[in-house]
Amino acid sequence: MNLFEVYSILDIEPVCGKGCYIYDSSGAEYLDLYGGHAVISIGHCHPLYVERMQEQLNRIGFYSNSVIIPQQQQLAQRLGRMSGYDDYRLFLCNSGAEANENAIKLASFHNGRKKILTFRSSFHGRTHGALAVTDSPKLCAPVNGREHVRFLPLNDSEAVQNALCDDEVCAVIIEGIQGLAGIRCPEASFLQALREMCDRCGAVLILDEIQSGYGRSGRFFAHQYAGIRPDIITVAKGMGNGFPVAGVLIHPKFEAHIGMLGTTFGGNHLACTAAIAVLDVIEKENLTDNALKTGNYLKKQLASFPQIREVRGQGLMIGLDLGQPVASLRNRLIKEHRIITGSSSDKNVMRLLPALCLQQKHADLFLQSLKTILSDL
Image (cartoon, rainbow, N blue to C red):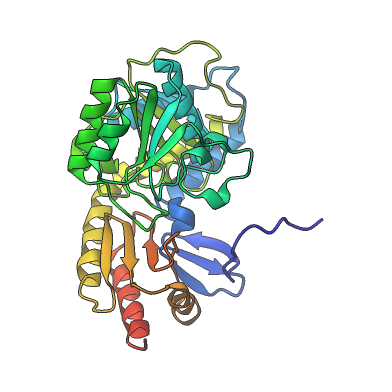
């Protein structure tokens, strides 16, 4: 049997990793500025993370949600304290798409409505409900109906206000920072207006912080720059530093009942152990502050490159718009300088999503390599 080939593959076979670096079978070292789609939050093979996972595997790796799993409550309390949402409740699942599916479902349970507002260039996942609110028609099969979804321009409060005149609107879902679109940030005033409009019409405000959360933006969640509190927040990617885990943070006004949501693997012993270890490292090593500091340094330096049309993002979630396709530039960074960067749905934008432990020395290495290649263009 062969693999079903649906991925564009980089010509790299990592066999081990440490911090911001991965190593191939020949021992070649690569600076990882992409983190496997923003998943590696605390660095590859962090010693504390590895130790905790090994200890847990020696006890018990998995049981379903039909038994008491103390690590779930420990994770909920820790996440609540560090994020500033200790009065919210946590539902644990496995992936960002699953988190968004449950968030939308929960919103519909709450107000009994079924229409969703989302935004152009959005990405919320590849499963049925998450895909419906993702602005990428090419990903939708004929079975993926979207008649209940309306796509609006980002940062257009008037368009949202007009759409919310429909009293069947269940929820508005928005990314803290649009990632796949090429790092596009909602304006603080726009998020504040969304909060006010949803309050007025009874719609649920869902913040997808799957890529932009967990300290990546320089705040625990990117929406916190706007000073708002969503009704539901979804998290994944950097939550487990590579182990599949995701969550839905839920406002206390939502009622829960047995059987309302469910998952077989979500919140298992290993998943919670991974997530708790990540929070411990983020806190002990001040990685949220480091993401802001190193990200600001990178953005300041990159803004001086005449070949770069625009530098976007917050913290260590950065998009570089070169005004021309970046595929060859990314390939040269890999082949000539052994630096891995990310693409986006905008072919002109390169994404930087490194581990939050990235230091200025790593940033300088990238900056010098990028400058060398751009000088040839």
